Length: 284
Image (cartoon, rainbow, N blue to C red; front, side, top):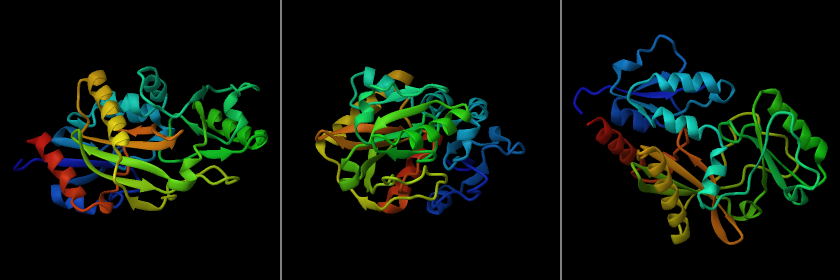
């Protein structure tokens, strides 16, 4: 890999990345804004999408950028599929355990007899970074919920309705981090969404993070999920974060992050080195 040039794609809000200094130093990589028109992306041997956390309002522009960047990791077809959480319906149809999801296109309200409204539920956009524009609602909080739906729809985005998974209040979410198809580390994230709270409007809401030892059931779900991606796209993602929650006593997929996930590199010894090694292997 001698002489290889590597760019880590980021956003204007995080010009030097987000807590990944060790990774950048190990790779001698350049932080570059994805929307900087002066960057010659073809000059790099690899471009790694990292903290591009402003694309949700410029989704088409971001995908156009990705499609014209050579040596992009993860590649543009994966990003196109993964940046719209409608993929959850595809995963469910493929037999993978996922959080139940109802899509609400602009102008559409949930049906009055929608079963998900009988208990606490969550509304979020299908295109979003982190937990932006996301909130939980109790049954009967129609006015609050519809205000968020209106805001999401006004931006031209489709909304999602999901049950609030009660186990998140107790044990949080599990995140299994994979580099080049191999498990690197896992963490447990505390809850972010609180009852009665306003929708989240920025990416500063980092939850409590704890080390996590994945269960056999979690490893099985993550493995099946990554097998699906490999068979669907014919590639092994350079990086993947599988977010799981416990529903009815079993792990189910909350999200599969293949685009710009925070990788919690600082929460596991050697994680930055493992990610750097995976990148070097691709470049080499």
